[in-house]
Structure formats: C-alpha cells, structure tokens
Length: 191
Image 1: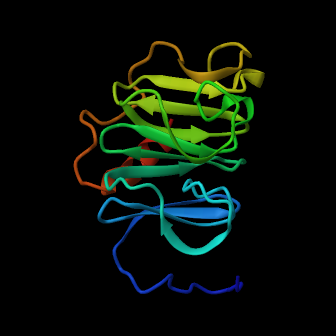
Image 2: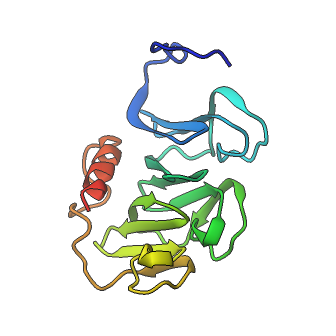
C-alpha cells in the first residue's frame, strides 16, 4: 500500500496492451493474450472476492477480451470480448448495469446480447453502442440522461431512437486485435 509520486513498474511482465481503465479504487488491464486482469479495492475486481488486492489477478477465465470500461462516478465495470458479449459487475443503482435488477455484483455477469461494441457510464445511467450502429441506454432517466426522450428509469438496455450510425466500424471486432479496444473507446468517445 505504498504511495508513489513517480511511475513505478508493476511487476516485471511486458505483455500488457494499452487497454487499461481505472476508477476511484481499482484498475483493470488486458494482456496481449486476451486475458483480463484487475487489482485494487475490495468487491471491485469482478472476481467475486471481497478483499483488496495489491497486485494483478486474472478476472474470469476468458482469453478473448477486446475492451474494458469503468463507470464515471460509481464502482461499475464492463468488459467486451471479441464475440460481442458484454460482461459487467459492481454497483447497480437504478439498474445501471443493465441486468434487469438493482442487485450489486462482485462477479462478472453477462448483459443480454452478443453484439456490443462499446459502453460508457455516467451518474447512475449507462449508454452503449452495438455493432449495428444502434445506441442503447438504461439506468436512471432523470434529466433525460439515458437518452429516451423522457425521464423513465430502465434496468435493462432500451434502444435510444432509430439512428444506426453510432458505430464507425464496418466489421466486428475491427481489425488489429486488441488495438481495436483502444479504437472502440476513441470512436465511442466522439459521440
């Protein structure tokens, strides 16, 4: 639990990709072999543990992770694999994980569907894009933030409008292996 004011290498491995995300208490990264790793505060890693972990541990047993995203203000995480499956865990206020309930999860749970490309989260709401270019929102609808034109709260993904041009790639996953995760975050961030 040492605090550093300058960069210090994490371990001796050199097989990390640039696909990394951090929230207020944990960090997740994808290795070149497609495995997902996490470390940090308890119940935030997605591995079902309730202890803080100070060095990287593998999350789940899949080796085809494409991108990892975390919530803007809450302890929430989403990971998408090359099959377009989206898995999530963490704090589920207002149903913002998209699982049809308001249960908090310390282990990974799949969000329905297999065509997810990217996801972003705000204050108790989530917006995601599918590979067909459609945009989906769920969680708190307060102030219209889940993009449905009203203030309805949804605990499962609901399509936002009828536009199909929210995704800039013609194939999924985009070519380039894990680099596509960086591209997904960049493209999604432009909308």
